[in-house]
Structures are given as structure tokens and as C-alpha cells.
Image 1 (cartoon, rainbow, N blue to C red):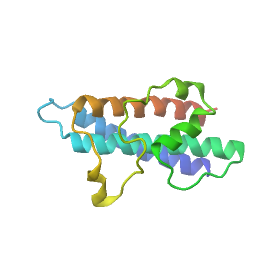
Image 2 (cartoon, one colour; image 1 turned 60 degrees about the vertical axis):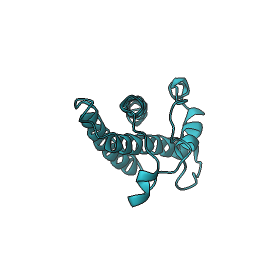
Image 3 (cartoon, rainbow, N blue to C red; image 1 turned 180 degrees about the horizontal axis):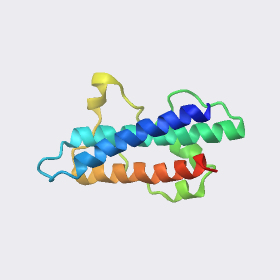
Length: 135
């Protein structure tokens, strides 16, 4: 996958993360946790996909299409110590593929704290991806 595709994934993920963060900064009684959850999950998935694509390109590995979040974490952790140190254990949707359209509402968290945790995970992976993109 080209650097341009990774940059596009990064931009999309960054926009999703901003939307999730904006939602989470609202007073807790006003937060729409479904929206924040979906945007956080999309951001995390896209940041991990971008990172996986960079490692796959670098190592000349062909990735299967549409890996799950858990598979992306496992793959990327082979090549990045910092990613190994991130605690993904409370991530509820890591074994599910990113769902599209109406199916996306099947799996989501309603807890503002849990969604905030996912947004923080996305932010951590974003930083790792930025470091990799600029090396």
C-alpha cells in the first residue's frame, strides 16, 4: 500500500477521532455514546490499518483484506515495542470487523468511560503511526 493511501487513512482516522473527542467533551448527560463509540472505533481501526500497511510494505508481507482490530494489533505489535505496551485488554470490539452501514449499531458501548478509553487508545496508536510515517 502506498504512503498516499496510508496518509488518506490517517486523515480519515484523525477526523473520526476529532468527532469522537468533541462528543466526549460535552457534558456527560449530553454525550451520544453511540456516535462517540463508532467514531472512536473507526479511528482506531484506520490508524491500525495504516500502521499495518506500512509494516507490511516495509517487510514485503501481503496482508489479508479486512483484518479485525485484534488481528491488526497482533500484526503491528510484532514490529513495534510501543504498541506492545498499550493495554488493549478492555477493548470490547477488537475481535469484530468494522461493520458497515446499519450493521454498525449492532456492537457499541454505551458507557462514556469505556468510549473514552477507546478514544485514548486511538490517540495512542495515532502517535505511533505519526512516528512511523515520519521515519
